[in-house]
Image (cartoon, each protein chain N blue to C red):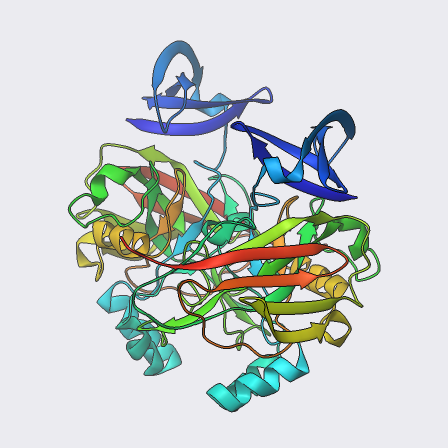
Length: 261
Length: 261
């Protein structure tokens, strides 16, 4: 099932995406629910972020090809860092839905897309084994782990590099049936394919990621974990439209807009 | 006003602490509310974390004395780091109330207290000036920014060093009237004073912290920002009880318990 979070005429719903329509869900997507007969055309609703996470986690350097790319860019320290499993907090304020603008700070010197598979947690997960991890995952969606450099290049945390408002597009919806470890991830800028990869090349797969984090920190229903970019990226400019497509799930589409505050 | 979050017989309330009793609040502490006549003895209620934050931020190296202490311990890189304003995400799963145990991972090699003043955000804050920052702060509470070292010493993020479950005791309650920049912070372990400092020595004061973060990331009602330890710390052992006291606010008390999973 593909579960979308959306609003129509100011009313918020979760719903099941079926063809070009979405049928409203009654109940909690993390517990008991039914799919009702109330439906809307997808073109008539506004997509919302799939969840409001307690934690929005990022995983870095999780594909060998991406690690080699970053080593050439930033040096050997990236290779050392890639050997450790080190998630970080991207921060819930970063989350935006498909269709919402991504705001580029005026003082960002580099501003890049990273198209990724995103895990959606379904129930509280603490000290979960790799074997049991699938039971704690509600489904998967698509994410764009916007990454920037600027005067904050030397920050020791990613709070600005990865965590400014709108730096975490997620969507368009959650797919609860897809198998996560053989999915193409295609990134297009203004309709041109810029990068392509496959989740089979992950260093730490989704089940290892959930298990590893849960040994130290409880994961909560709705938590999002963006699992790393597979390949290359390049700086974006205001006005460009970035699409991240995972064909089995859907297309996450966001326009880059310069901050005009 | 001192606003406590508590449960009694399984029912959750916010309440106004008045002497040895707490009077239940009707409404939202972030909006309109009234203090009702329904009251309970403080000894008969269970304190809960003051908020369920969207973000739980940490500020490091925010007192010159603490910076010198960490430079002696970890080297000159700490002094370089201290020159930058770099908050990090501690993570909402770390939050526990006064009276709840702090769980020490079995593989933690160093496990330390850091008694701190904690900001509680009152309304959405984005691009706020230093002058306007007080308007966005609901009040202040006490925090213990538990910090650890272990096999995770080389992690580039603080996800385990600062962010394991229970590593963020906060409480006992929110003080909405206290002035934040001349407060003693006293840390006791098993009743013995181990450290003492005053918030007047902060490098970045509370208003600068709120303003600085809000230039890049929206702060949300209930967000917590722990503002740095003033002085020394030392490793703790299971069974020890840590009290952080800010006399104008209250005492945050937690016992260290070894993880026995």
